Length: 109
Image 1 (tube, helix red, strand yellow):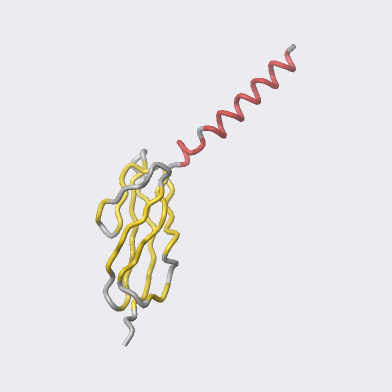
Image 2 (cartoon, rainbow, N blue to C red):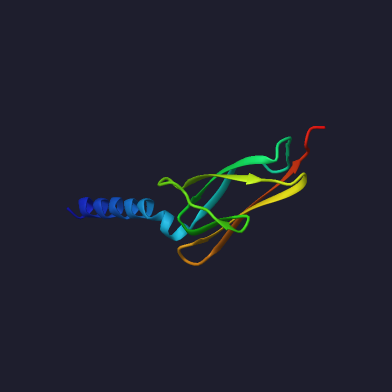
């Protein structure tokens, strides 16, 4: 009887740790496209990524929003030359998160 109770307690504890791990791990940011140091030939760009478990999300200083699964697609117009794309967020515990991509835009001649 004690062995069964111990097993159930262990199973329940592992389940709770697995189920609520994203609460104490905090938010996560990712930029899927473009990759870092990408070479682009068009100034119009769709930035794709995710912001999971975040309370506020900004792309180059402009607030953006995710879909119900935490993914986003936002259009940017870049200048010719070197551009920095910066994604910033705050998670629910007030921690600051950021992700950066540096891209080069060269317009066709």
